[in-house]
Length: 490
Image (cartoon, rainbow, N blue to C red):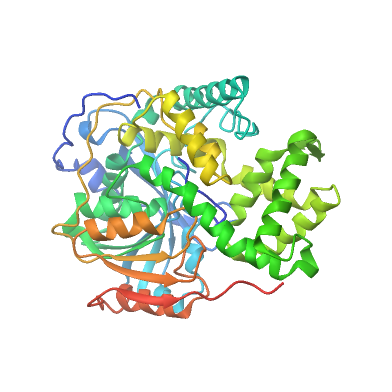
């Protein structure tokens, strides 16, 4: 659930009788033997990369007999005449991935040894994007702390309608956006590239794809780095539910003490508790009288979403502090800029792909009454995010029967899991559980760190350990540890 500059999130069915996942069939020649045409990418954002398109079946369980889709991929080409192949995924799930190789443009050793590929997974970016018909964020501006009967009805109705828009407007393709189809797309791309094995770096939701690819195609696994781990041995609901406590921990243990330390600059209070009380005061004021910035309302739900967004990356702490100081004076211009960035991340197609993937993968247990109860309990303990979980579910989703293979690591070469201790979006508790349950995995723990995403940032210890594994083929004998790099100075 790492998106762009780590300002992202993973967000988060009717219980149908599941059928076993089909055995991997022989890929028809017209897919496996296709030739790629590489050319400079057409967009300004991707101008450093080459782009190509791969044709894949709409439904891998009916390959060669049904419709086709197009998969948009990119390449950051190595100067090495015999490079290894590295696939990447930024997370989400549902975030377009062609720009991800640019994350590693400054990693010289990685570039010298690998062609680095980005993939817009099916239903995202330039790969036949899904749609919510412009209703992806319906009701997201409602205050989930308001537990009145009327507001609860609005929250549930708007979320239900938004999911319905996403499912209906995504059409036939939406039915086939699930993890099994996506990892088979990945393996087709591997075949078309002529690679016997692939290496992989996946962040957040990308750890889910990595673990499942390794489960479906263990013989094709080289060195797999899973950074900021979902609970990939469990369910999407478990990963979503764990965010309430994880965001609250990051907020209370990292941000609030930090902003209090610099009270002379930000004027939020001299202790973490004073700063939290000031947040509650500001939030109550917005609930009573929302502000308007550039013609758009800025109320308590938007305020919470801004703070949640900033928890992904400590580099944004100073700007959030400045925004809170400005809000003390009754203005929200700085904070509204964060809100605009968040809206851009949660695009119509991204939300459609996110819901399709998570809701198609597996049943999502519980009723709307369960949502009301659980979100109320979580909100009482973890108010920053807990209350809003009332809108994050797959309740009412009409999913096709599919049963994914269970990722247990058996028969898979050792993968390297990387986890920051206070990651807000992918909790360390679920990462540890996945580590215990995925045989042969190694864990690199980053203590005292709360950003979402570790490899490729400013932690030399993390970067060295990952590249010894990824580039030098050195599998750690045991789990590893690095220290975080500390919080910023304004």
